[in-house]
Image (cartoon, rainbow, N blue to C red; front, side, top):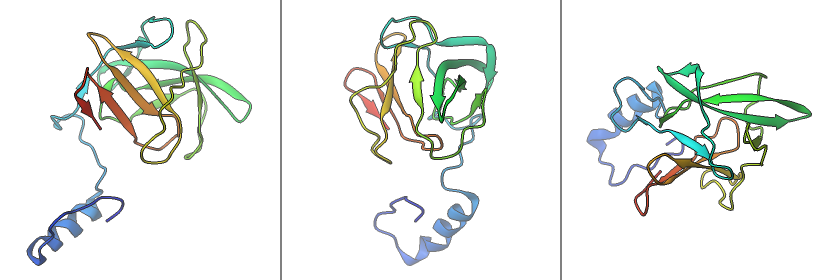
Length: 155
């Protein structure tokens, strides 16, 4: 339902699944969801921190990157809470737009070799402080992301 798989569904839980779908299966409550936690990241090319304490999203410093699309160039601030999809940007970005994403320090394009498992767009790698890599989908509106903390991958 709505792109979600429910295994071994019994008649007794169909009404619960329908109720969850009406409420929104992808709704994330940042304040109470224990699967959401802050990550501090840096550029995968120059290792400079991408954290921006001037932009606060979800109560934490944002991850600030440079983006371009449709002859527009500006900045994008992502929530540093892994599992939150909240963003702020200098331009209105239409849903479905694939962004070109750059480090605001070394100006390297941040595109890795992986493709998003949900939509096939390029994944954007960032180094997690303390070890590991987080990758987010470059397509605006896609919630595809991967966190690899040295063998333990979370999607």
